[in-house]
Image 1 (cartoon, one colour):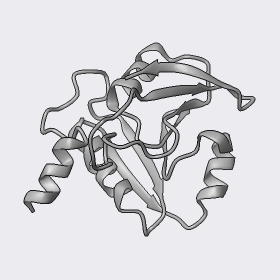
Image 2 (image 1 turned 60 degrees about the vertical axis):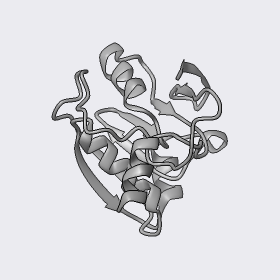
Image 3 (image 1 turned 45 degrees about the vertical axis):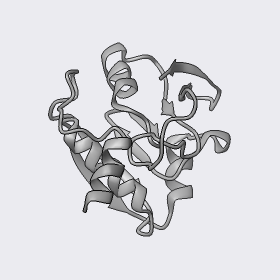
Length: 145
């Protein structure tokens, strides 16, 4: 239990609620049944004030294609928040920026599974670049954490 709690703290999973507009926002996290880090990310999002629905599927490629997540910036799970997708272990700060600014994009993504991101063990070793993805699948930097 101490090990798991330590991982949650390292991954940014504090007991503090988010201070942004996310309180009560309903989200759906699509994940494969074999993915443990996706479960930790779901817990992180709940602790940040989101109402989390988890849908396990073995058709993650179909989900990513349906939402328009480019192959080059995919991660393990895909979240649907309102009209947006959020790909991977995106910290709540980026999600709150997305929900506050409401840009005309398909979603945001943090590629791969960087160490220390919410739900991932380890320490942050480099800046996390979150990308904005337009409806054509083109992407550019949304923000860096």
